[in-house]
Length: 196
Image 1: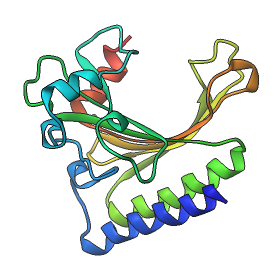
Image 2 (image 1 turned 60 degrees about the vertical axis):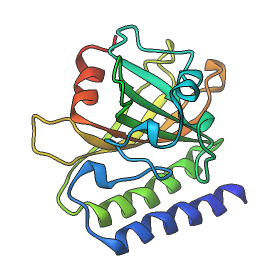
Image 3 (image 1 turned 30 degrees about the vertical axis):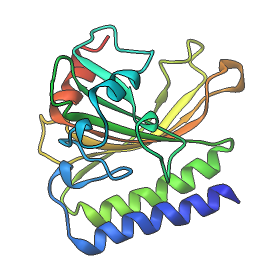
Image 4 (image 1 turned 180 degrees about the vertical axis):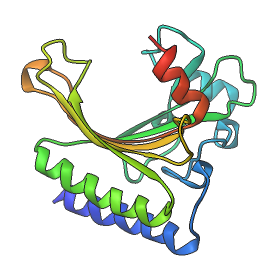
């Protein structure tokens, strides 16, 4: 029941945004009221931001991960993270990721499809890439990532909105989550080429 209610809430949230304007910039896409390009200082003090720094970070620490759910109450997601460049005194967001836990893959795929429809209504001109691959988080190779990526600028840009079901096996002891992420070009380049 909770998941059905969440689908309705997320759909209505995206629809309200769609009615206000058609977007053509990744900064126009919000998750829990936050957009790439916003400053964490708009919702928290430097001391609060430092306390929200995530315990898990990328090996190459060019970008710092913060737990947004420690800085503001969430309405639609179970947890959220954001990133900002290391030593950025303005804490400008380069990535926003929201996650929802799930049990059954069918539930995640239905929610993913609803979010896709809303994204496609908001961003008319986009390149869409469906993905289905073994998760690198699970060393057995049995866990899968099933999702879609929306590229908002022409190749070679990797600036994107992604909606992925991280379908982990029970053996992996990793949580199954639907994740919606917004990646700036600079952060996307970092993920692909420098993070690990």
